[in-house]
Image (tube, helix red, strand yellow):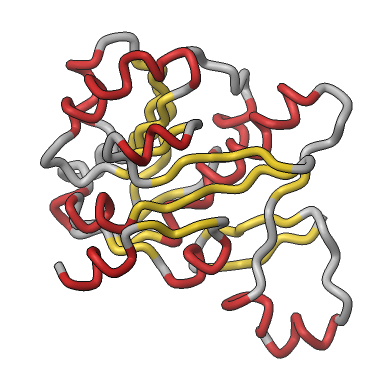
Length: 204
């Protein structure tokens, strides 16, 4: 497995690039990022391992304003709302990493009112019936919201995973990111399957 470096984190791809010279030149680092493959065996475990990999890497591809981060040296919170299907994978992938000198902390949130403390909010399938409430509870806050259905973007979420032909991909709602005052790197946008509201966000 090849890992592409960016800032203090890496973004993974399961496919080997055709030329080592491309790596030395750095072309693949900024422009050619690939979806994460999900093996046919044990699809649920593989799916959530791929999603955990993305969640661990997303912070390096987002411009976090100082006021979006917790005060002092408090932890950078990655919250899961709904069913927690990651097992220990998400904690393992974020262990030893930091965002602007703040260590990652993974929390499984049960109550919507707890979500206002999150820097990244992942709403799982089981939480989709309540995602409008979850998004309302982080409305006006600088939180990166991530879901698992197309409807999540329509409701105002920023990123949503999709699975197609054995890969995990994601879509981006730039207007929602702009409302949250989060700037998403062009390198991450290049990896996205689809970017919606690009024109609207550019005008804001």
